Length: 116
Picture 1 (cartoon, rainbow, N blue to C red):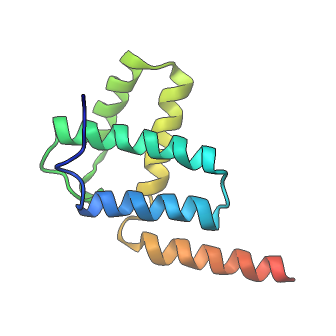
Picture 2 (spheres, rainbow, N blue to C red):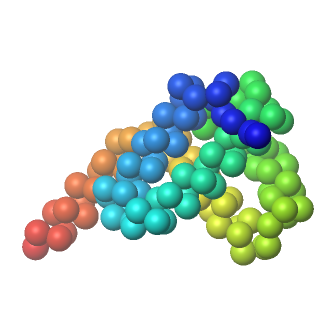
């Protein structure tokens, strides 16, 4: 059985937690969607732990790592599932170290627009 014990508590694990909260609270995704994203991200963290144990933060995930993961996904999943999993990872990683503030900023702007 796979687990992510070595990754838990690292910066990338915190990024995962922050991203899931952002999806739930700011993007207002359903709990089912957020749960599916959590599964996708946990699978990626397991891959990192097994193949790239030195990676502990999102900014360390470079294109070759994602390409390796995509190859791994393509062996196990349908193309549509692999694309979704990569898209979720990309969404979590796209804002890097500015993620929390950027997500909060987007949330504030959405709230302002909603009040109008």
